[in-house]
Length: 252
Image 1 (cartoon, helix red, strand yellow):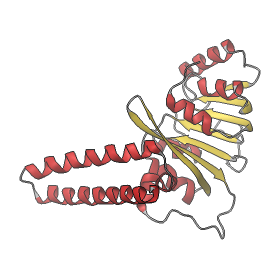
Image 2: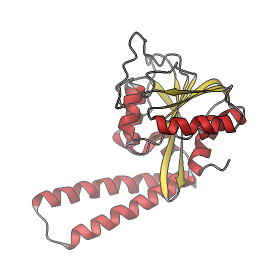
Image 3: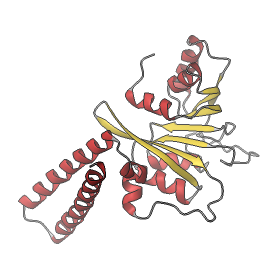
Image 4: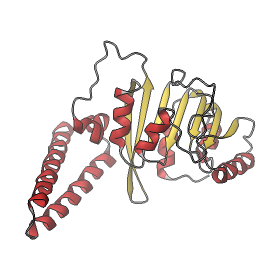
């Protein structure tokens, strides 16, 4: 099975575990590979839509791993048992946050009546949001006390994606978070501290985007509101450049 660069990195990031769940499993490729590569003993492939779940069942059967992968029509985590490791990718940061907070999101609005919702049994979260990774980071740290232990960035089909590994550290009492400012949440503290080459490419591409926007906005007379927006963009650009310089110093 040939997987995208992004899916390969997600699977690579999953720690060895007994149970795992791929929420929003699409065609079931990640659960299949987790079993075939021996990274999990049992996996649940869950999706809120019947179509992708049907395709996942067919692929799981064709791969000969039906005895080790369950499929579940589930609105996020509401209709599955919480495993040791939860994998969520291919959706926006806000939706990911809602799923992890057990908020109904699907059209059928499953309620999971009588079920106690908790992530206490989950040890690892592997998350790859399509957008708003800062929302995910903030939720992990400030709301559910998971510690972000690793971040990677991958470029797949011309787009940049972040992969976040978080671990359940239990109570946050007497534990200081390394996330001190907005930049830590926006860009990812672990990415800024590390030497991820794709992250460096991302920062360079983002700087070029900012430069193009600033150049265009400075060409034309602007209203007071537009000038305020230009000032905001320049501040963000200066912040970005400071991060790039800091990473360059650390790499020397």
